View (cartoon, rainbow, N blue to C red):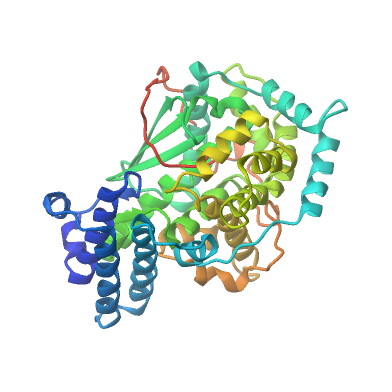
Length: 456
């Protein structure tokens, strides 16, 4: 196996990695993923920590060196974009005034705007028609979720069952390195539903907040997003290909609030369509039935597809808070009205949106899903969705590489890019289903800190 150290010999790459690791020392949570040279990490830990202003200046200097280097153009573009994002983050740590939209454009290479409330209202109408009963839509949706809920004590086993069923599908369609592994644990009182910590050597630890089981039939959203073929699969394939085979050592580090995060979250948001396609609700019902759990899978899928069209309301909330000067109460009211959240969950989401590190990160889910969905839909007649999705899993793609295919009004949640259905367990493409492991959910007061409320 090629050495990870050998993939980081270029001086510009080592400086890029050094700046990212220093940023992680300045603020816990900035380094989302690191599996590079341990000697470099030790040197960075022993280094005198510069001021955020100094680190921003260093990022600019390294970007100039990258521009004059002999690195291939695609690597120059990747490094330059990410150094600009890191510089922006360092300047914010220094207390420099940076507008919210400017931060988003620099860190994620996208422009943002408020969503269309008429479209939200149309999605409300779709959900209303799908739910039994009458009266307040938000209350009915909450009752529907409660009827499809698994408690914390059974959450890990249920997610493991769904993950084990997804894995052979992903292995057959996209490939997985030998020895890859995902471990799940349940934690409590986190500002996210689930979070993947990629550990390197094709291993991930996925932490699930105990409230993540509130919609049991939607567990494939979590398992696909975090693991197969989402974050875990992407990290495995990029470690195997970009880092170990192509010696592009910059991909051994992922720093939050950078362009690669938007693409990665967009990929993970579309992972369910790229693995199961239409019919994932019935597929989930079959998987969970083997565990003695009954869910209304088909209805859950239909409700979720309409609810995804409301995700722009999350981005609206961030714009209202950080660009329009709205009060917390106004934003809570917006989320309860348009995203149909209970007040407690809306306040939970606002707490995440006002966190200095994560205030802009919601954009990665909303614009990432929109951008990746539109790019997948723009394939030519000879390409399959799986072919196009495979490119995103393996290559260092920037948001600007995808933007040409996106349309301004491409609806979030548009189900136009699904692969052929694999809803029936007999269509596993030769993969063998693995039984639920006999494990008890791990409960911890800590757990990995980083991700947003939702299905990361």
